[in-house]
Image 1 (cartoon, rainbow, N blue to C red):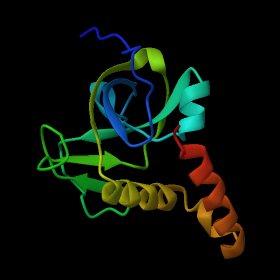
Image 2 (image 1 turned 180 degrees about the horizontal axis):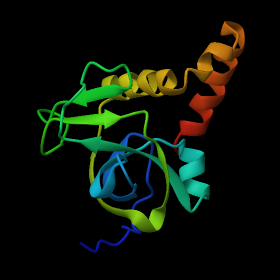
Image 3 (image 1 turned 60 degrees about the horizontal axis):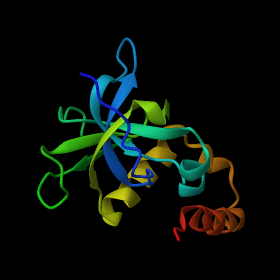
Length: 143
């Protein structure tokens, strides 16, 4: 399958596109839905994005790094699961057609699952976390 990046659309965090994942072994590979998970300043200024793969195989749905997103009301063709422990840096050249934007309630779950995937948040003082959160809001602001 050959798809071209849709140049009339700038990817934004929370959007789902068909993406060509380059995994090997047990990693996700080939064309599949992927969630843009990089801040919008980075998306606008970098030739790459950070993507999280989706799968319609809902195995291990209770794992804290997996987020199930139902098809009903979200624009997905099938109930799907975001694999938050498997981010991939991806060239925009490997992004295909826009599919949907997931609702904020699911993005919040994805954010939590991604934080748990690395548990790096455990090294941040709660007061500093508030400062980081405010910076993140600015990075996702869109004009």
